[in-house]
Length: 467
Ligand SMILES: *Cc1c(COP(=O)(O)O)cnc(C)c1O
Image (cartoon, rainbow, N blue to C red; front, side, top):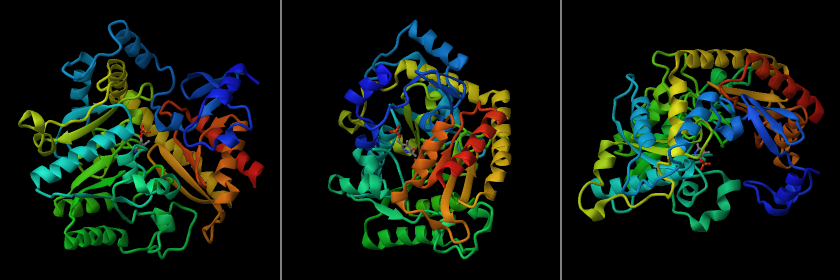
């Protein structure tokens, strides 16, 4: 066994990992990467098919981002945002506000509050909204509503908004109460009367938008009971950790309209979906956020994962004036929240370089063509009897595996089918992680068509290995 693997097994504790299983075999130790390829300490090559847990946008060791970090490092790595400003954070603030207000939606997002990761971006949004609702709307004990299957991070506030039982149920006693409303999940929706076809469930669904009715009813119920919602918190266009569950087009604007009719804010958690991940490269202006692709401008936009291109931990909670203005006033009215690394200079420099890349015409063309390539290369997977649903939303894909596609009969969780398929994929040189029985494909934007074809071929081979 490699000595670094031994040290890991002896000393480290990995996230979301049953360590008893982890300790049973030699872990892959990543030593380097270039573009969409990762290399381990034994010199084995892997395709990074989940963009290093949904963070990496432009590939590893991108020269422009490396250069930006080096240049910044030659000046200073970090200085405090408590009482001090800095160059890259100011420049990035201006660029984020520009990107957050494309011409297709009202230009209402005006302020950037930095933090370190997706969970802290959500945590800040929660506390801001709590105060906004109490001070501005005079509601003493506001509540939050989020979607079934929602995942907003692992800190206590974010977990309180989460609705994935395996992750969240055990911590119930630690959490504040939030409400949940049905998420659109066309493939397994009880209101979908369509018969499965060899196509995305959003295409063959037959329903009357009962999922929107559920949102309306949830807000009405809350109003009758006198605990108005301060905000609807939503992963726009596609719920990530829920299992890559896409919303049918038109759901988001309808849900946002209902929330606003009830004076609730719309908090868009774009930690996974932001920075072009859900597509849009083929539209005028090539909007970078999922909300905007649905014509919705949230009151608070939370970003992290891809913000720095996947290079450094960096997050932002981007808010509108009414929220910001709530905290103007006496010293004690300030927003009492912050982290030591807030507005980190290296992170901001990397993020600026990444945003600049995203706006270059050749980068936009590359994303548009990768999106088409993904659609084309996924086509043959519909021939696989264990493939129930293939859900592509821009540059992210969830493939739900089932026992029988005609009945949608799921594999039992204990069979760990998704896990086994991903183990087989790894042996074939492709790295990704499943969510239950859903295989996630989320390439860095630089992945070539040939590389993506290799991913899909390896997946078909992994099905043969597993079933
Ligand atoms: C990953 C994720 C988070 C949490 O981000 P961390 O950086 O892991 O704290 C929150 N929301 C969504 C939608 C995510 O995908």
